[in-house]
Length: 281
Image (cartoon, rainbow, N blue to C red):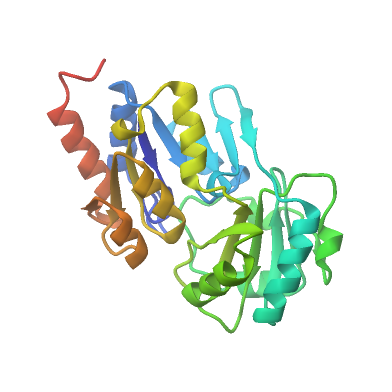
């Protein structure tokens, strides 16, 4: 299996995925390797990457909270955060970081408190974002409880104008460790991503690998940020992207060239050349 993060790993920040990387991912799939996209993106943000790569395998989204079978356009599994947990998270985090503003991700929608869009709009653009994203209707309210209904929340997000990504993550882990799993994948804005307790990219991969009868020792994983750490440690060989977050680099077995230099493609090309005789056509 090849388990790869998207933004900052195969999708350079602010640029689309390159033809070389697309070809390498397709070649890996054609050689018999299971290619799995493992991303913090919600399902609705996958379309440009799926369209560019023609990927028809599996995708793990929202940092492990939801797994999709792209071939059948179906949900394999979903984990959600209970409404009462979300409200407790908000109370605790606001006590520690008073300026936080919240948003919730569901499988189908993104809902924000007032002020969130103004703060988030200053972020560096990712590559291969949905063109219709900014035209999507978004609920806006001053009160987090009004964002919650019967639709499952797969990720809770908090943004802090006065913090940094790592400082906000430290606060999240210190105050919320018994409620949710906190991480981040931001290169600028302090954006805390919170998943159901115990849910990471690695837990999503553990379930999928067991279903596909794949030994984790035969998995190659690629990532660049704190939300990739568990995945990099779980895989038989974890590659962090050069220039990625120091904690991701420390968690990896190997360092790959950066996304801008098609680092994942370089590694996969070498693997395919080396193991061509052992991989099924």
